[in-house]
Image (cartoon, rainbow, N blue to C red; front, top):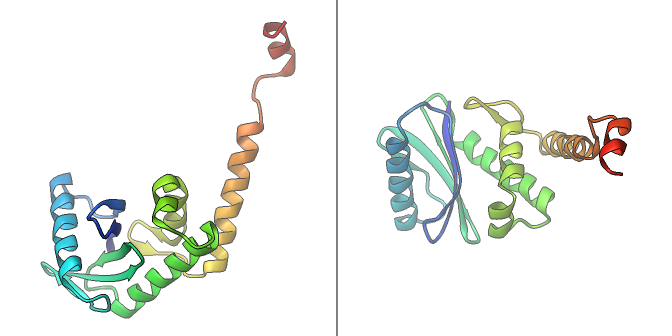
Length: 159
């Protein structure tokens, strides 16, 4: 089971934190701290272990993409999942950068929710995830332009 997905900048600023285990927030902060200490001290292509929990990461530009998981998951499968996640971000944001992640965190969570549910991987096809995210965006735009108040009532108040 995936326990956490993190996107952390090289300046130790968390850009995305999504936890799938139910622990106290202090434990989450400790995990983020220990993960960044390992990241900043390690080469980019190494798989690390954090207190009995497995961790795989990928360093791209100014960001670390980190997946923390338990022994039921395969390290190579998680590394591949990170690659799929980054590919989807590139497709959705046209060469994703740190600012895209900062200013579009809702879309980032939507993408992640289409891939992982409750710590279990549910979709690995980048085409399917992008298609689902585009459909969600289309429905959100459609619902924001739809008024649930009948025109007869709104006309009374706009005179």
